[in-house]
Image 1 (cartoon, rainbow, N blue to C red):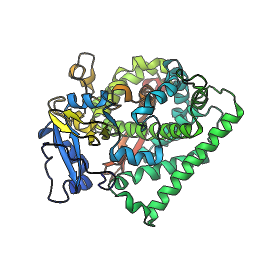
Image 2 (tube, helix red, strand yellow; image 1 turned 120 degrees about the horizontal axis):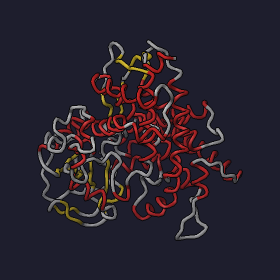
Image 3 (cartoon, rainbow, N blue to C red; image 1 turned 135 degrees about the vertical axis):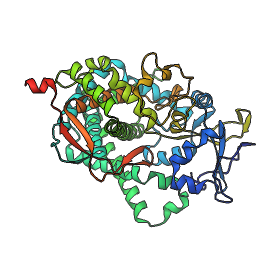
Image 4 (cartoon, rainbow, N blue to C red; image 1 turned 120 degrees about the vertical axis):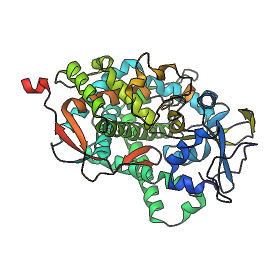
Length: 462
């Protein structure tokens, strides 16, 4: 959290989080082990104050308070250091824009993710997933996160641009620019903005990558707007969207770039991390993996999955949910109060940074017994996870600011996981040491796995 990015707003009478030090506050545990620091918080209080030097923030640790913050977005608006740094790249897209412009943007982009479009997107997903997984070679270790990013980026490119605007080279450039943004984000978030002006190589790389990313997308949008044809893709839907409260008004070119950058990041990095973590967890839980193989063999019988199969892939969906619980890609988010308010009996002045963390909530032992255990059965129709209070499971947030593309992401993750495990079995490559790498998303760094072809009954008959 960036002490230089805002005025100091001290939440009144809040208990301090543990492991704070004089002067520097919680800077050291946040820099050295942010996940360990976050995971220890629910044992202390439902709401705590964290400090970095003179900067203070209020972190909510209970599901009830988390739900209150998420649904009251007029009071707890998008803001704070994480959102401020993200806006440097994402602009004021639907994920980062303030309350005053969010309703309009949401109305304009919502048709893009209408349920009637999901089947078409699902067919695109299946094609791209099959193409990438078909390139693997048995016995040759792969960088799992990289290959999952390849799947999700190709899916997004095909869904965004039906005419193949993104060649492989152009897509690789965009993904490289996004990775430059992603890899340095956590460090940048902890750095005072005044230091951005220093002629550091990392700062120059970041600025160059972000300018090139936004410039490339601006060129693509201009080309599509000039052509004027509806290609049935995401970009065509965005170009055609009109505000019902202001007839004839749509998204400006600047707003379109913001939305496209948001889609490119949200539609690739988060789902790629989810899939990579799921494969890692399955390799570490052979009983669940065996049950999953039985399900995909029965449902798919050796063919690629389609959107029509998703309703039958029950265990696959529960594995996705349990992976989101353990490793939510967006593991903490900042908000900022727009007016003086009360939270759990504590007075918060206008401009106070409020943090909520899916990682914190999802690992509370009072909500999820044995919270570190990978247990997809929590999500059975009559399982314990279905009876939890609101705010207990928030990988996509909640309320009016809930992720607009959550159904798209879940469909893609379910189809990809089914397609991969129907044909392949993954084991950790020798010497692999996986570590969660907190940045803007929670990625499994160092995850190398070896694929082997499964000798399924359907394949054996062929």
